[in-house]
Image 1 (tube, helix red, strand yellow):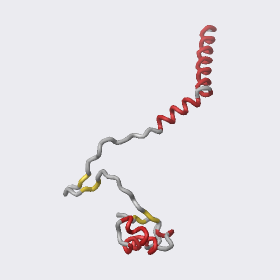
Image 2 (image 1 turned 90 degrees about the vertical axis):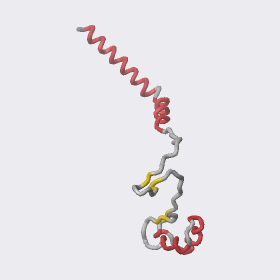
Image 3 (image 1 turned 135 degrees about the vertical axis):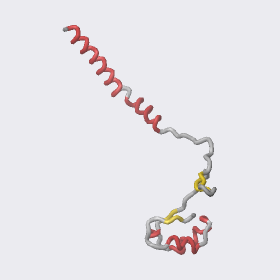
Image 4 (image 1 turned 180 degrees about the vertical axis):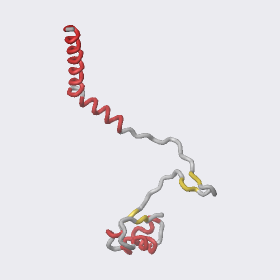
Amino acid sequence: MRYLSIGTLVVLAVFGARAGWIATVQAGELTDKARAQHEVIHEVQAPRGAIVSADGRELAVDKHMTAVTATPYLVKDKQGTADKIATAVELSPDEVARRLQGDGGYAMLNT
């Protein structure tokens, strides 16, 4: 029984020493490895097909788009702002100004 207790203590001491070694000496290296595993960028190689409705109208397609948004209640000069960005969003200045009217917190400017 005495040898069993000593053997158990030796095994626990080895496990404790190994855990201490990992937690102190190898901590930096293991942290870097873990971070590298979480920060992986996966490139989608193939384009995705279009999602269409029952009548054949495209609902979602695979193309790059840029969204231009504004916070209307923060825009002080709505008409001046509309005049400056209308050509960039391919809308008339009046349409951009109309979308900037009101006190809402969100307005899409290029749809």
